Length: 98
Image (cartoon, rainbow, N blue to C red; front, side, top):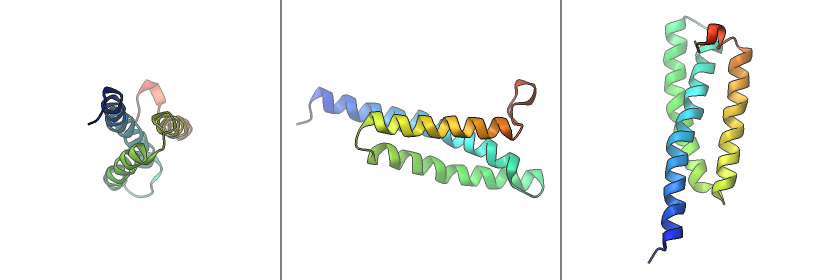
């Protein structure tokens, strides 16, 4: 029978996968929408489609990581790198992304 600590560990991973995965996928979507070539509508559509795979990969990573601290560190680093990339791509002009 799972202990309270086990249940809390799983709950923490679920929350990290949901919110951290969403943050990474949203940042990646915004960045890809800015850098993909072609008409803006097609770039946004392709970026949105790619974000579903990115979210799935983030969720898989959270549950595959040995510890929740490592999963948090990796998702945090990915979010930081994507934020910098988005900043360099001009995604935060006038305080608004895209």
